[in-house]
Amino acid sequence: MTCQLMLVLDITIVNVALPRIRESLGFSATDLAWVINAYTLAYGGLLLLGGRAGDLMGRRATLLGGIALFTIASLLGGLSTAPWMLVAARVGQGVGAACASPNALALIAANFPPGPARTRAMGAWAAVAGVGGSIGLIAGGMLTTWLSWRWVMFINVPFGLVILLLAPRYLRTPPRREGRFDAAGALSSVVGLASGVYGFLRASSDGWADGRTLGAFLLAVVALAAFLVVESRAAQPVVPLRLVAEAARARTYLLMLLLTGSMLSMFFFGTQVLQEVLGLSALRAGLAFLPLSLGILVSASRASRLLPRTGPKPLMLVGAALSTGGMLWLAQVSVTSSYISVVLGPLLLFGAGLGLLFVPLSVSLVAGVPAEHSGAAASMMVTTQQVGGSLGLAVLVTVFGGAARHARGDAPGGLAPGELARYVLAHGVAEAFTVGAIGVAVIFLTVLLTRPIPVGDTPRPSVPDPATEAGTEVTGTAGAGALDGGRI
Image 1 (spheres, rainbow, N blue to C red):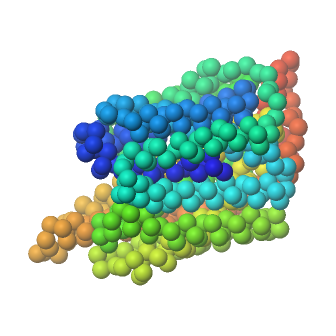
Image 2 (cartoon, helix red, strand yellow):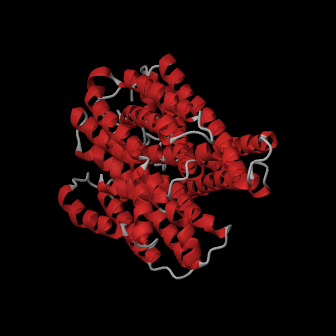
Image 3 (cartoon, rainbow, N blue to C red):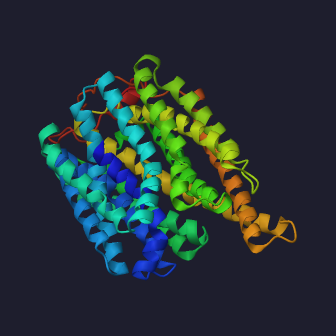
């Protein structure tokens, strides 16, 4: 859990420090975005490869190697004296996180047998994933205000050292599995995912019609199409396609994509509301997210206990309803809003909904997956979260931009420049939250009208694939699950 907290913190902790980083290292306004983008691209592009590396090289070894790289890169990032040094360190952090994150999740499955113990462990993992973003904002504000921006990098070093010292002692890992490395699948997955994430990043800043945005998406489509062809023929693929062949599991991945897109957009636009509309400092804005963290922790804990008795569907319905209500309430923000009237309640509601959604979604996506494919399943889930965040932010930034332009044209006359900026921002954010609420409402309707993946099942042994049973190791079981009514 310490590993997951450290990796999730890093997604948001740097955001608060960006103005100080720009002043200290001399970044240009356009190049500053690469402090975030370098990490996002390396992390998102290599996640599938990191999960497969754990299957072949050993999950604990891959996890510890990733944490070691992440820790060293964090130290070097804090010592940076030039922009290129910090960007290179952020790439190193992303590579390390891509090796560590899916294998941390896979090791939970390996160290906890199916049943209540695994559900509680997955619940804790989901709670950390949900609450880490808001903790990152708080920690980033404190470290930047009281110490230096360099401490948003240095803070990872003690966490990393603790993990490296304790993990070998307490983590049990399954034996290494012999197998061949699917180089073509690995290359096409890295190119496809990195290009797709880059396209979403470009769309957020330069629009969907930008030439480089379109070029990135075209490359992503070609590479991912090649990936699917390669994986369908590979004896030992990076991702067994049977993991997503079952309708219920594919649907659950899409629900996770929608949820993470809404969650990261909440952090992005919520921070702007708190700082630009309500006038809070970076530190106070971070502290203002504490109700969200509280809601996630309480609801995730309850969901972990209730899931074995209720199954995933009731929890996800309540969670989606709460989260939708929270985002719709936030969409009422205006220049006359206060924290108590339009922020506190929605954060509590959205946080409670997140906990009730993340736990059953996370448990469902690894339920029934054979042990030899747990690394691939974990990397697929984390990749879905990463791509969902990038996609959701790109879409809602586009919505925000259109609404802001419209609001500028309809603004009352006589507003001072600062008042006009707040008016435009509030209207744009309100529209973005409305569309985000629609995305979460889609989760509610999908859960209401369909059957979720059963949880609590013992993983089945692999079932031979007719295409590969002639002398090769079997690579998946989801196809069998699809044939017998939805269980893997």
